[in-house]
Image 1 (cartoon, rainbow, N blue to C red):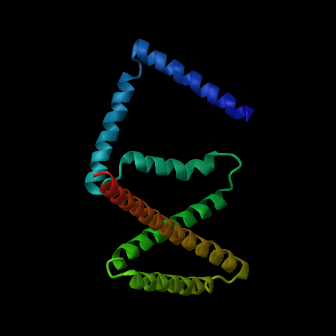
Image 2 (cartoon, rainbow, N blue to C red; image 1 turned 180 degrees about the vertical axis):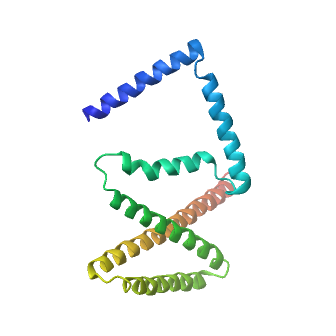
Image 3 (cartoon, helix red, strand yellow; image 1 turned 45 degrees about the vertical axis):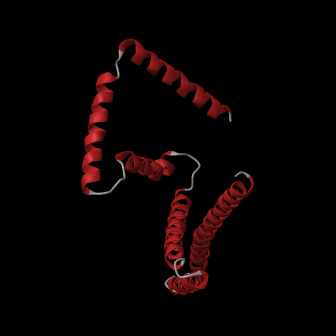
Length: 184
C-alpha cells in the first residue's frame, strides 16, 4: 500500500510539473500537435478501411491491456490469457443469446424457451466433442469446466439483462398508468 501511495504521489508531482511547463512555456505544443495529427490520420485510415466505428484509441487500449501482464509483476500470464479467453467466450455467448432472444421474442415465449434449450444442448454436445480432443483427462476437465462456466456466465448475464429491461418497462408502464389515473 505504501508503494502505491508513493507511486501516486510521484505521478501527481510529475503531472503538476508537466502542466506547469505547458502553461508557462508551451513546450509540449509541437509534440502534442504531431501526435494529434498522426492519430487523426491513423483513425481516418482505420475507420475508412478496417473497422466501422472502432477508433485507434480503442485498438491502443486493447494492445496495452494485452501487454500489461508482461510488464507487471506478480501476474500469472498464462492464467491472465486463459481468463481473457474465457471472458471473450462468455461475451460472445452473451451476444449470441441476445440475438436469439430478440429473434425468437417476436414469435412468443414458448419458441424463445425452445431456442435457449436448443442452444444449451448444442453447447453441451460441442463441449463434449472438444473434450475428447484432449489426451490428458485433467486438461479435458479443466477445459470443460472453464468453457461451461464461460457459457453459463454469458447466458446468465443475458437473462439478467433481459429481466432488468422487463422490470424497467413494467415500472414505466405502472408509472404511466398511475399518472394517467390519479393526476389527470
